[in-house]
Structures are given as C-alpha cells and as structure tokens.
Length: 245
Image 1 (cartoon, rainbow, N blue to C red):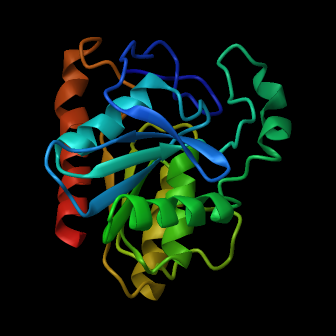
Image 2 (tube, rainbow, N blue to C red; image 1 turned 60 degrees about the vertical axis):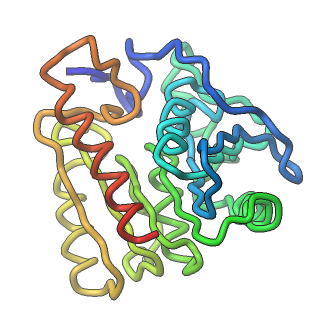
C-alpha cells in the first residue's frame, strides 16, 4: 500500500509528473489553476489542495479530470503565496508551519473565487472537492455556504469545532481504512453525529485496505491491486457532484 508515513502521508513515493491542461490566472489576491471543459458549462468545482499546495501535479490532474467530465475546475492557492509543505521538512515542525494556514480560515479566498466563477465564468452551480487539508476545508465550507451545491471531502474532516455536523450543502466523505491520520473511530463518530444532526444529504465511505492519499496521490501503476478502489473513489466523487449539481 502507498503512503505510510505520518502525520500526513500524501506525498510518499507517489508524486506524479503530470503537466496539466489548464492555465494559471490571478483571482483577486490569489493565484489559481483553471481548466475548462471542451463544451460550455455553468457548473464549476473549487478544487482544494492538500498541504503540498496548489501547484502539485497530482491535484491538477484531478482538476483536469473534473473538466473532462463537464465542470469548470479551479484550484486556488489557498496558502496565498506562503510556502507549501515539503516532504523534506521535519514533521516536528508541522504544527508551527500550519499555524498561519488553517483550512478553516479561507473565507476571504473562497468569496473571491465564488465571485470569479459567477461573474467571469458564468457558473450557476458550484461545488467543492478537497484532499487532506482540502478535505477539512471542504467540510468547513459545507457548514457555512448553502450556495455550494455539493462537496466531496477526501480524507479530511473538521475536528476542532463544536458546530461541525449541521451541514448546509450535501457532502460525500471518502476515507481510507488504514489511514494513520484519521482513525476509524473518528469516522464512526462523525457519521453518528451527522445522522443525528444533519438535515441535508451526506454519505461516508471507507475504502478497505487503502491508506491516506490513495485517491489523488497514488500512481495507479505502482500496485495494480489498488487501481479498482482508486477508480471507484473517483467515480463516487463524480457521481456525487452529478447528482447534487
């Protein structure tokens, strides 16, 4: 299996050399990677990167995949120019690095991107997809933005807030069974509380045998046994967006 390191093993051994099909643009105070589908579309997805930042080829590949399925995809730099995490850094410094890059402190950037999508791209239905750090951000936005029609949070969840279960937009949570970052008891607690308190559609899905980072980080030719679940998770992501957008 891929990606066994702690505390956020998104990038171990599986970095893609993918180049990307979109272009980089300036949206208000932030840069963003934007890729559009071949046919006009009024549907858009904000792709929220992990701790390795908006330029990571693996995340841009996911944006391109969304565009190939009919969505305008935009991956903004939610670190706003600050240095992304690097696998060469000392994990003992991670919390200090994270201090000014909280995934629950992105409202200014999200508002700018929403304005861009509505006014410059003609987007009428907007969703979010986020990975790891971005999965937390996706969960957070689902609590605050009813105008976001659907969210897919991939191995991420808000943990530090009390009001984290009353979602405003339908959200799919994708988890890995062998995720050392998100224990299954936390996933079970999230599901139980959502069943009690959430009034919009939601789903939690755990992928057996997989580890953190498998959906967007795993090179599918490293371990053929992983490929079916990688493809299933991506299909689930697209199906959720298609259903709710």
